[in-house]
Image (cartoon, rainbow, N blue to C red; front, side, top):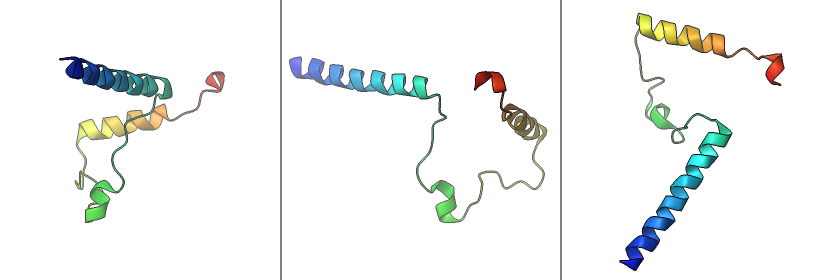
Length: 72
């Protein structure tokens, strides 16, 4: 039982450390190197005309990329 508790505590410390690092860095999660591009797929959605939801997401993402001088 002590081995289990030591192992559980070790993994708990690791998970907490990763969570704290993620919170302070405020980065998005990144995938593995290559991903779909390694098998010849440029993007996950190969639609000619994106749907309205995707267009709205892209519009919002473009607006959020502005730099606010007050935050610098």
